[in-house]
Image 1 (tube, one colour):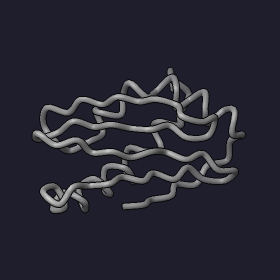
Image 2 (tube, rainbow, N blue to C red):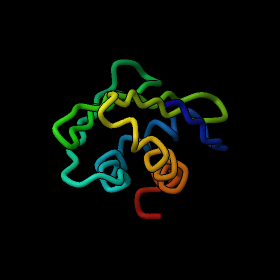
Image 3 (cartoon, one colour):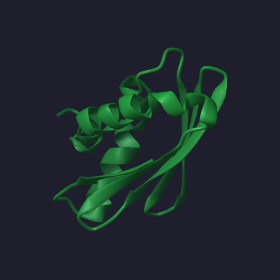
Image 4 (cartoon, rainbow, N blue to C red):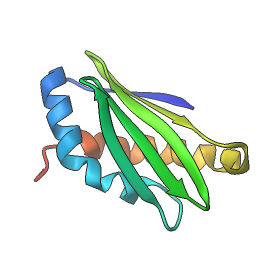
Length: 102
């Protein structure tokens, strides 16, 4: 699943806000008992490992000039939640780009 959300920030600012808000990612996923681990394999990519329902969901967020692109690889056993995950990213994804106290 790939979903792009537009932004009007510099890449540096997007990076800063994602780093400061990444602890909230699990709050935006519509599954119970979610554990999210993030890492930065490159300057403009935040990798995600999401543990949910006995499965590991891998994904990443790519920072581009005018959008952030969320890519989530749902295992077959969780394919049924794709619409819920997409709706959650659309609804809550922009909050990851808000100022941490905003």
